[in-house]
Length: 249
Image (cartoon, rainbow, N blue to C red):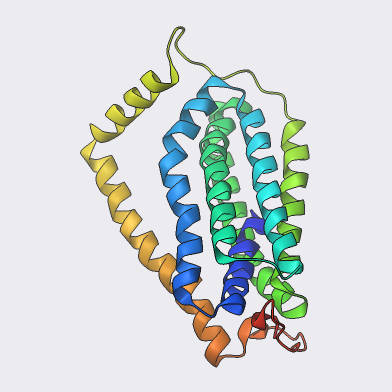
């Protein structure tokens, strides 16, 4: 999660360094979000059909491969916006399988009396790494380049896959004879039948869209144009902008 928090910062300054367009940056980030939304229910179904830790391992490997491809494109100076958007879409697809599996894995490993404490500990650590990862991402972009920051994110996915793969979990529980499409239909029906649930999802969908636009698109653009780029707030010496990324300063 720390690596994943670094990636949007690095990707933002990479895209702005390539074209300087906030529209291009928005399209790349939207490609990832749209993929996650489309495949999230399917990811939940497969997380119930297969051992959840193996779903998480597969997701990490796909995410790591997509981030490695982005890093290579940026470091070689051959990246194009459509390529970054496609790889962001792939990363979003893999995330759609990771999160349902990770949510369902905790009750399989933690005794019921400790579940509340485990959830609190997990959320605290995730939020902490999310904040720290974004700060580290800015420092790495300032000290090196967006490509290297994303390369480190790719390595973090490999380490996570190795760690999660060492877990031992029972296979997911599902009804015998049920199909993927039947389970998708049942899941959507249960979701849509609870007005309070989909109303909350819609509400926070709007909030997240506004927040993401402000923080992940407008924020880097303002920082690059008016505040000195990714080096703001860290003690790294600015580097001269390159054709690959003017955000390295």
